Image 1: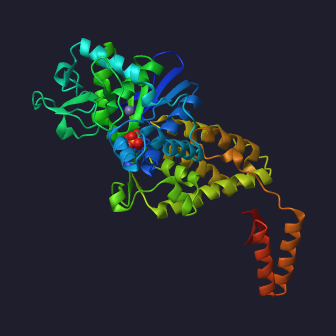
Image 2 (image 1 turned 180 degrees about the vertical axis):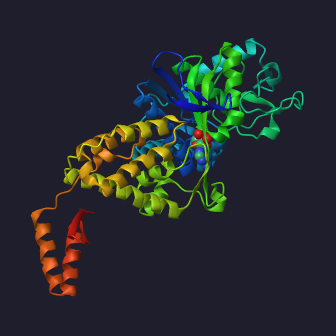
Image 3 (image 1 turned 90 degrees about the vertical axis):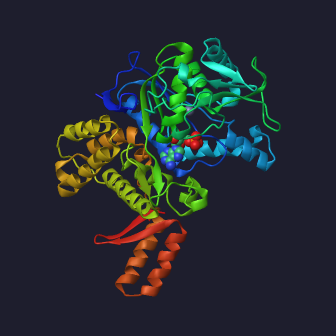
Length: 453
Ligand code: AMP
Ligand code: ZN
């Protein structure tokens, strides 16, 4: 039984979808005005684990993730770059898809773009105007939050101190600024705009997620996920817009992931601690080591990223890969029951996605095997680890034992002979030659081992 922490009730709940085994999952996607930073990627990894856990449990998941391609900051930066928004976002969209691919994040069923759903947003805004939940002012349209009695239910904000008629035009704002928020922004010189019955302009940020999630998943979604910064105002506003328009519950489970911090601080360009997956790769770390690092903490705890922790994750993951290579090479035929490991893994991951607990089971298998390998069956272990990896997504099935070609083996033998004769310089020359041919020699107590670089 899967349990998830639901922000609507502020407690862990058993997960039961609305319709049988089908799950509608909506996750707020990137604003494509920059390369995704590693905090964004943490959130996408947690959402991927959520999706994989659901699928592993036999649910059929329809996952929709939007791409925000019209928004305040994006328009500002496109203007600075002297480009229209459509050309401006292209490289960032492309890099987003490259990043998630490198991180083994399974693709969503659809990535709808805001600019391709303007008619749906207009219809939703018109519906809110017709119901008296929205009003026009100076060519813009605002949501009337005091007319929606449940406003604040998700974030717990207090709307009693609201100033009548106070409005906020920015897409992003804080709890201190709880006010009527903008659904449609009146046309401004130099900004993209679309025609609408209530005047030319462009959508606010919040309306896009209500319009696109309901278009693809229906009026009530099983799960809506995102990073914790979206709880207020974004998700609060989505509830108001959607429930205001349909009169139906918008979301059954709101699942939000905590932030990634860097050196204990919020990531920001001005602090110089703003990293992307490219930065990680440039420093010689693999994207999957980053994924492993993220999995070692619970998604609802904030995680402090340091380069040391990434280096630790890289070497831990390499040990797991080595363990897999070992299993592929040495067949053991013990009959130890693997059922308890599977049960423990499933219990951990089903308890609100405790990935750290789940990974600990992988290490338990490794240490038990090291203690008594003959008691266990190497094929059974592999089968189980591949099964766990359907959720962890560390690419364990791609790990192969690379058999060194004869030429490399001959060189290694020659090097060994020279070492035995204490011809260290000559032996080193051969090591370099082997390395240039793409192999590493590791000297172990059982003799030299060859590993593909
Ligand atoms: P954005 O591109 O800003 O719309 O954000 C995309 C996703 O990343 C959203 O789900 C955010 O909540 C999430 N996010 C933003 N900053 C962080 C962070 N430092 N750590 C984790 N998730 C974040
Ligand atoms: Zn959203």
